[in-house]
Image 1: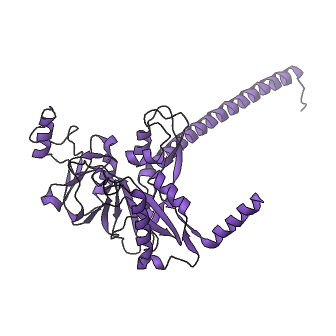
Image 2: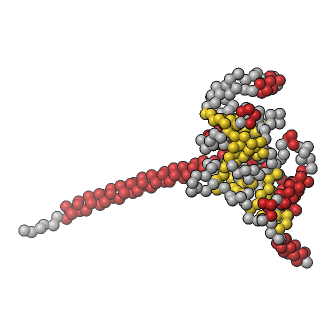
Image 3: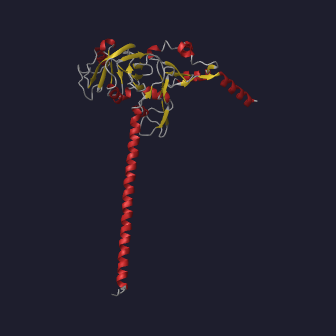
Length: 371
């Protein structure tokens, strides 16, 4: 049998084959584009989700509780402002109170920060003097610290949140109490003193009972303290911009998301310490730090000679037995750093110590530059 070559048939076959080839290549190209587009969209979704989770995790951040001879935890960070947000928006996003973020950023406009302006996030703290147990609230700082009981095999942690406290006429009381009741979606019975104050200011009184809901000043969570015959609460708020300020009638206000997170963690019977410490001092690896906050308004006269009181507080702190093991032979206070801290009252821990030998070396270097 002979095979007869047909050039026209071969040409038509090759032409059809090339057409199929280009169709196939085009299909692969479009398929690849579709896959790349899918991967790109997936990547964008992943980035957006990751950024969202990172932002959310800022609020859920907890820290390992340092050992008894270390008093500082946390980290100072920065972020950039945008023209669409106020300084108070940034404060809430990073779980910082209003006064805190203003003290840390005196040159940034509260309502109209410049687009791209660097904003300091004051998220480093000296633990107030007190028992590291339960809840510890420092009024001038307007911040609460929680020391949960560690589970077996777990390291102890510390959690902190900003709070709003009582105005000068309705001070939040000092002392040690405990949580005696917890309630979700509480009703609110306005105290008589608050009703009288509204009437005196020409405002209509509150209803005798405010039911749970969007107009309830307590928010959705409340924890009752044993102090003051149970008339003081730690609760949420429907006015979150008041967190970090003196705005309440004596109760302790928290961001709604903070009280919600804390509500299930804090059991009934938890100890609550309320202290008044505008001057905080603490150790970190043999170095002394100071954290200064403006005193409460009712204490202004007491702190009229603020510098002398701060110096006395530093000397008293150094004289404690607990401080002596941190003081090395060449330890000394840096007077310029201390003076700057007193001037700034930034609410952030500031290093105020140095080694004597290091200072002498700096002095010699300065003299050699002058010569």
